Image 1 (spheres, helix red, strand yellow):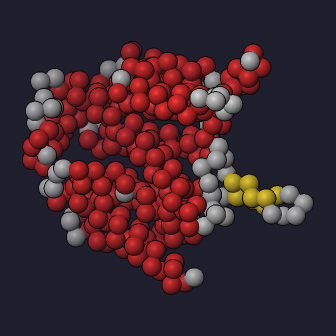
Image 2 (tube, rainbow, N blue to C red):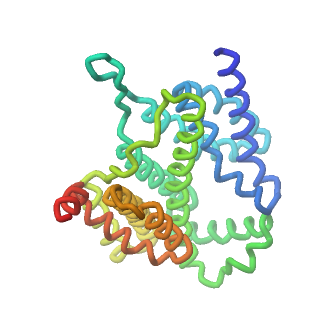
Image 3 (cartoon, rainbow, N blue to C red):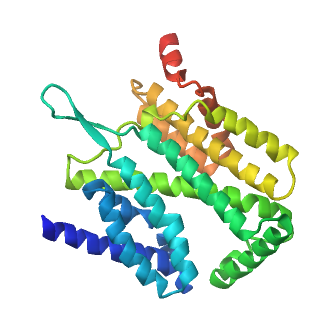
Length: 309
């Protein structure tokens, strides 16, 4: 057992360092997307052995990444290592229930999801303040970032044009917060699927169809939307980012509702597959799904739909 743990620990250290460093080496193409799977080895360890192993794996990886620069190591620690330790703690929380003490009740996936939303938002807001505490410095830093991106990925220069720096400045944090939410959630889903193949007693993905955001999120969304229209400068950028994070959460909430209410449909796989394809190919299709999620702000929409059927 100890040999297995050590082997998986070493593998996780190497993989997370590779996934993070490879894009920084100037390589492009399909393997550039390895960056998206940085949390996967850490989630894998966290689900199998607990959050302490995530800490053990992160420290050597940070040391390896440090050879590429202090700021890069700090970025990895802040945006990947620490969030994965935090989330792995809640992923592993459980209690034993039942008369025979064999039923394991895991910390609800819905609450983990809400923590992913807020964690992604906090990381994005920290990133905004790091880039500039006023809109002038922020815009100048954004321009510099895009110039650096062109050096690493020259193929993107035809796709991204800096003809409207205000638009780019406002949209980049929103893109990043959506990126963090998806990367943390999708990697968690992949990790649970892999670990269940190794050990059937570890946490499963059960509960996605019951995901709902806390009731106070609707008021938080209203505040962000008001500030996004009324505020100026860096506050406006931060408010747009906050609204994007909450709306992204409600979009996934809406998908969860659809997963729940279609449980007894004979054509459920076809319906859900078609929906996901439409959302991926035509982004505006996510709007009605988001509205559905917002309608569930009281966490009772599933029961209402079922009662009417």
